[in-house]
Amino acid sequence: MNSSRAFLTGIPLGLLVALAGYLAAFGVQVGARTEESRWTAQLLGRKAAIARELPGPRLLLVGGSGVLFGLSAETLEAATGLPSVNLGSHAALGLRYVLHYVQGLARRGDTLLLALEYELYNTGDRNLGDWADAVFIDYVVARDPPYLNELPAWQHFEIAMRMPFRRLKRGLKAWRHPPPPNPAPGVYDVRYLNARGDQTGQGTPENPVREGLDSDQPFPALAYGLPDPAAAFPILEEFLAWARAAGIRVLATWPNIAHHPAYDLPPARRTPTMIGRFFKTHKVPVVGSAEEAIRPVAEFYDTRYHLTQSAARERTLRLVEHLLPILGPGHPSEEGRAGFDAETRK
Amino acid sequence: MAIGLARLFGVRFPHNFDSPYRAGSIGEFWQRWHVSLTRFLRDYVYIPLGGNRKGVRRQAVNVMVTFLLSGLWHGAGWTFVIWGALHGVYLVISTGWRRWLARRRWTLNHRAYRGACFAMTFVLVLLAWVFFRAPDLQVATRVTTSMLGGHGLTLSAGTISPDGLPGRLLQALGCSFVDDVGGIDHTGSLRFVGILLLAVWFLPNTQQLLRDYDPLVDSAIRPGRWRLRLNLLTGAAIGALFFLVIRHHFAAAPSPFLYFNF
Image (cartoon, rainbow over the protein chains, first blue to last red):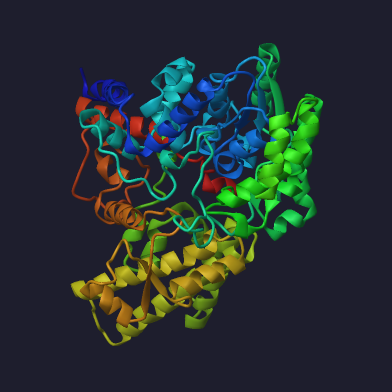
């Protein structure tokens, strides 16, 4: 073999060997439980257990950590008499996964209340890079290999290729020696979940409000408007069709977000108008208004989406007023009426 | 890329870049950076204007006109004009300095002098790049002001401990320390930049590595010490590197090709 031919043979050979080595390294650490994914895994596990134990038609709150921190299933249940579970998890898991999680728990007769963060409306399905961020990759690879295996082969491959080297290293380390649990930072620990899956303890004397939120910039998805139609609409349409077929009612509401002066300007109306139109077209009742969900900065704990515990309760009570007429006759039940009165007196 | 793609079609290009960040002067930088454009501007602008044949002042004017045109060629905006003007000024000063040395028959060739020239050239080129890449003059001014210490000197406490001796010395010089902001790993970034700089300054470029295979139509490239033999092993190594490039394509945010703008 002359040197040119040997060189040209070497290129695909080197490529294939490197690819095979990389995929082997990726493969062996699938299912190795990284410490970084522990909180999310425990969170989803605990909420799933709560939801499974609750009998009868339930009200399930769906979204990312904006729901986890910002709505109170306990308050809703007390006020409506409808068994409620907060299934809010982590927006970084992406819309597809957040809905997949709910699909595994919802039953015929349930009511789902979607309070999706604005960025979730911008996560489409076509480009994996839109939604498969580092948190999602870390989580599904470490904690949900069956979901990974259900993905089309190309997306599975893409997730392997998109995994950061540092995460791969951590995964290999966890595969050889499972890491000991680290003390959880602040309220990011499942012991702060109440019996209905709500986050508690944020903004209390034990866990005071953090100084400064994650950013003082306006959130572009709200301030400037998302592309119309939003990338997530096809995923939502698919989900709504599934819910209809499964006899599950879907309602929608607005995500809580810290106020910024940019949200008072006309461009900030674009995204809520588009989302409202989408739900109206698909006959999904929208509870409350987007303006109402824009809360003063002082009500937030550590990010623009995370309300303090007391603010979450107040926000939920306001939501109940809009929700009761939509839930229809029988809500609140006698118990619920008493609960609502008791909650509002607190 | 252009040289390699052209060779696939049997065409040989002249060299266009020759490790420009190893230049010891602005003049040398322009012999190493975008050589085809430099050659064009020299032959069709600088020399027709009179080049260095009409006295020192006229030469300075010719240099400035040539570099202002070079700036405008790169983009129709004030940032590009300033970038060109800066390089023109650099070159005028550099030429004047050399002339001044020559008049005194001084030959400065000490390692320390060459090192200082190299460092100064690198920093001046970087300073000019701010104008080249900034979206507008306001941003460029803000960045250059920060680079020159106009907004104070701040270091990440994760990179240098403020309590150690170097940290205390830097604080005495007016430097303040902050925690890593926005989840940016400053120490990792500095390390990465350091590795890239070592590669840029000390590793041979591809034309030097492949000079046995005549990749270019000219032979202006400085030879360098290392050569690459094309065999199974080097092919496999390039294949493995190609894998990393493909993987990076999946993981990284898309970056538009800069020269599509020009």
